[in-house]
Image (tube, rainbow, N blue to C red):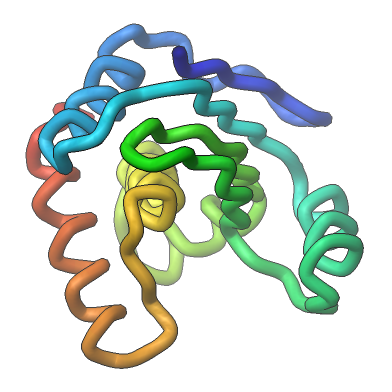
Length: 137
């Protein structure tokens, strides 16, 4: 089950196609979908959570809370719509493309991918691009 919550921002994900796409990412990675919650919010909310739970006093586009059990994917993925908008301008892509990238990035973390080391970040980016090519923006 995939759920979308909005905190002080407009509802922007209305397509079942997005949920199907995310479910297919999970299946293709050989896992099963459990409960996945995407929380779309503003910078202030995500910064508060970043400080509260990770002790990081910095803005970020996505934070993933992993509640996975074996191959069952469960988690909360918090996304700053402000950061997505800024990133879209920086990388010269449309807003939805960047939103989808951040959504799959958070999901890839739940699927076991890391991005702290350069080699891991490269693999993560390749996976993001691979799965972005499977969705129509």
